[in-house]
Amino acid sequence: MAREECKALLGALNKTTACYHHLVLTMGGSADSQNLREALQKTRQKARELAVVTGARLTVVLRDRSLVADERAEFERLWVAFSGCLDLLEADMQRALALGAAFPLHEPRRPLVRTGVAGGSSAVAARALSARSLRHEAEGDLDVVDLPQLEREILQVSEMIDDMEMKVNVPRWTVQARQTAGAELLSSASAGASSTGGMSIQERSGPCDPSKALAATVFSAVLLVAVALALCVAKLS
Image (cartoon, rainbow, N blue to C red; front, side, top):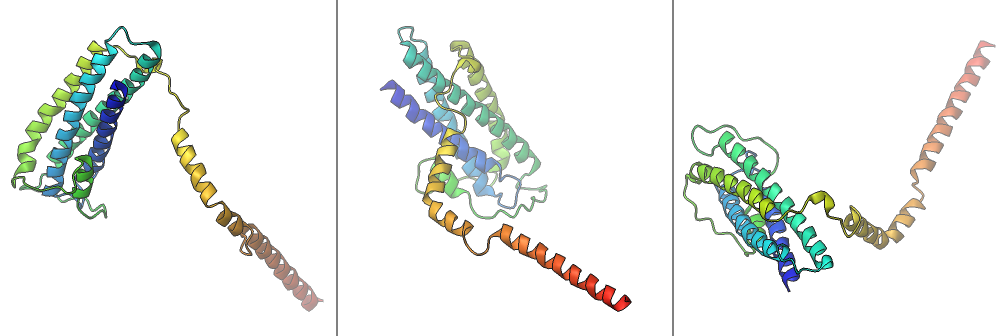
């Protein structure tokens, strides 16, 4: 029961931090707006709430000395994944603080970078918050007011990381993965290849084989050069 609960919490935290990372990457670009800053604030708050709950639950389990070896190894893997989510969240919050200070939405306003990306960020934030839609209720000066709060929250996340390392000592290099690196990508790639195998074989055996076309082109060029040399020799003689 505890394992499934921790996995569910960690999955939600992983999804929320990934959505926050995606939103931070659009700051200062052509898609930046007041709605984006509000989505960033709400997604960040959701990630911090999940981090507090997940960290407290994992700490209680890992400090239990009656935990058997196999279960402890599994919870240590979850702990390492949780630590990675916190590291990513802290780095993205620092990036958001720097970009928010560099690209304020009010006067004096710097020109936004024309990245070519357009569209709203409400859908991404709604997925992170497990909501159908995101209601924008922030005031007009949210980007100015939120920067000091964001700076305080960065310190709180940093203190959370230090505190959990003091309570639970799980060196990351001692935790062994249950599958090889990139196994999920390889499995999805093999599934995709099997579903399109018939089409790939047909394409390779079709009349427009690139290698055959290249060979025919080279042969034609050599033949033309030979004919031209023959004509030149005939005229000179």
